[in-house]
Image (tube, rainbow, N blue to C red):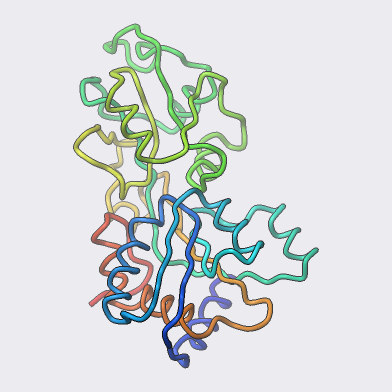
Length: 275
């Protein structure tokens, strides 16, 4: 059903034209890097268009769509049941566009002598069942693990809780942060830290380790072998009509071969064909 809606919408997108206007995009930190590239390239082609992008979490983007404060909501998760209920209550209809795929990378401090972790071990750490590194591997130091997480406004958080925690709450000692960059900085500064980020944010400041022996790479996400991966979305409000004008044209650009090349450029997996 989701694929059918997306395909119908893409056909409609192909018939619209753009004029000078303003486009407001809010939501996911994970989608932000590629959305920023799309905005810069799109504005170069359409200098009369003004584009505003904010990355403060998937929930903030979807909330902005409800409040008519955004034209496009970036999201690294599917709609929550509460959001779907709110749509039904308000008589609203949001269309999802899968714009890319992403793997959730597990990062540790570069000085920590660990190269792999299992999904079960991640659950044990973030649930509080395991609290020191030697419980993960006897060769590691008997030091307290310092786990970091995104906050609950983040789609990355939602996905991690769903896929790794199986719906269970994080332990009280897990420190929740408002941005992916904050997680990278904390892990970089603390030799006993662990965190999780969209793989497009991997830098040489920290060490991205394998999960169940699989690296967080484009090829492994594309093949489905990497165990923590997900689609990335852009949602638009189609309550009154399918997207048109600048919204439709921007989406068409994002899903074009040129736009999908940018997806690969930031370390994500393209959802559609490239050049």
